[in-house]
Length: 86
Length: 131
Image (cartoon, rainbow over all chains, first blue to last red; front, side, top):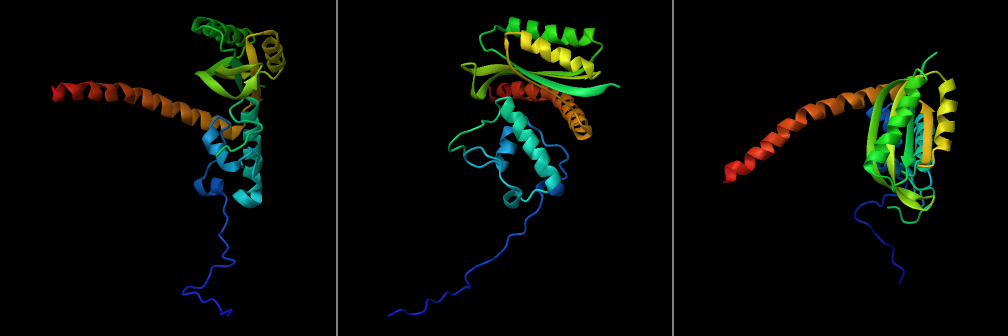
């Protein structure tokens, strides 16, 4: 009954995508708090800041991102709490 | 020592355009009185807030960049607090990269402003061709 399942192409398990810091790659030196759409890339659906392990940013720029997000939140450019932002 | 600062404030949406201009002018004059050098002022217009502040869902955003002594900031913020029209404000010192970014942005803006009249002319020219 239980025949072994065969795949024509090997199933991709454990294929690691290489993470990189997008600020270093594109040589962005300053994270602008006014650009809500750009900052949204670093937030989850509830408006929380995503961890470095998911975005791949280097520590230096993660700090800048978090600062920019917090400034944007204070000025009501980004929400503090939401649902279904994307 | 003079530092470069950036300040943004949100005004209540109940004001008329003239009142907005008046309050912005008031703060710019206040800065000038305190020997600050205003390098950029921007009006973002009426924008929707991401969450209600004082039961308001929209607000007039205004940005001022200036060079001043650090002691001015405290005075400026007390002025902000006294002003009832202001519902939110943020002032911070610009770091090296922020200054570079803003000067680049200014240059781009100037270029666009120079280009704009040409585009408008071409748009005006097109309908004439159709006729």
